Length: 105
Image 1 (cartoon, helix red, strand yellow):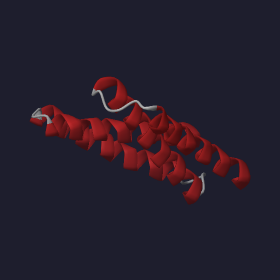
Image 2: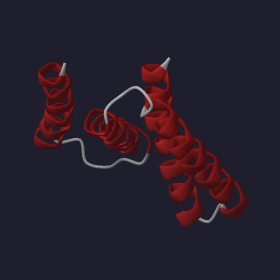
Image 3: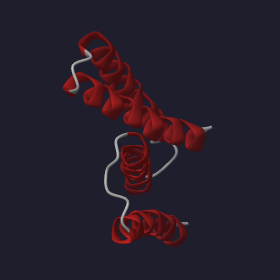
Image 4: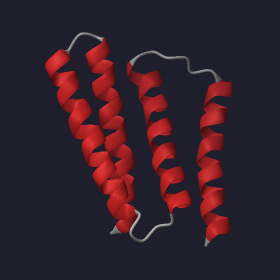
């Protein structure tokens, strides 16, 4: 249950980021709603996850989900650069979080 809360927390952070994107592109009510819903639930869910998952692991996974999913959405929805070096760095973020989990037990 705690790992599902952490996964949901990272995904809700992406909802908040999408709200910022909508807000910056002029969709004020939708942007503010997504921003409040996304970041509010994200913080609530990560606090729940941290009841059983150590801080270092929880925050690393949380930020990695937000970073990776936001970057991939940016590449697919908003035509951000898709060059191999950028994709390689995204893969390194994923590998780093997996490695941190493996050595932390």
